[in-house]
Image 1 (cartoon, one colour):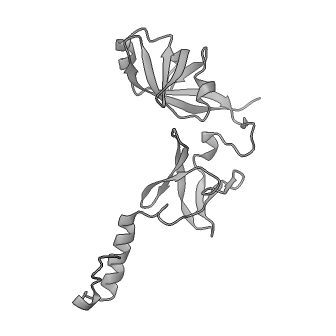
Image 2 (cartoon, one colour):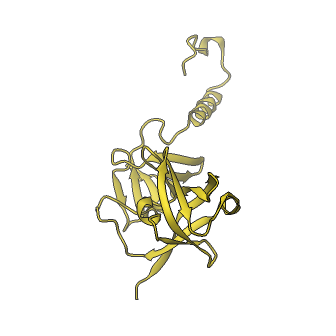
Image 3 (tube, helix red, strand yellow):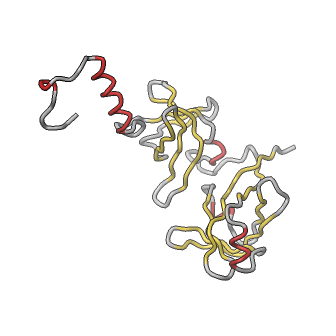
Length: 200
């Protein structure tokens, strides 16, 4: 028997116009498939469904008309609704270097030296490129999901390898804190220790 898993494909946003059209924040790398006319999407934690009448791109935003939303009033009432579908757990994209969001979320992110960075919490599909949001002890970090920065995705091991370019995973504030801590260890600062250029 085929094992099915529930995956989120989008979140309904603001109403657009007066005829029930809504903006949708995609949570899938296949919005053209999931929001094609005739597709039925389920409301998370509910048996309620929405059927896509039409969808289109508008200035980088996905706009969708659902059969169930007749006007702006109806559209405004469902803002924030999370839309899900049931998919085959073993389904994979056609291209071997492509991955579904559900396969990436939860993977451990490691440096090329094998040091744990954190865990992938979300995949963001932005107009220019996809981004991995990695939860770390110091907060969420965004990493462009491109081969130059994420050269290895090992689903069997449950890991991705991240090429840590300077500043990619470390905030300037974190670096400043480290510098201050180092300065404290060296003792009080004197006038001779001050860099007149102001550079760190």
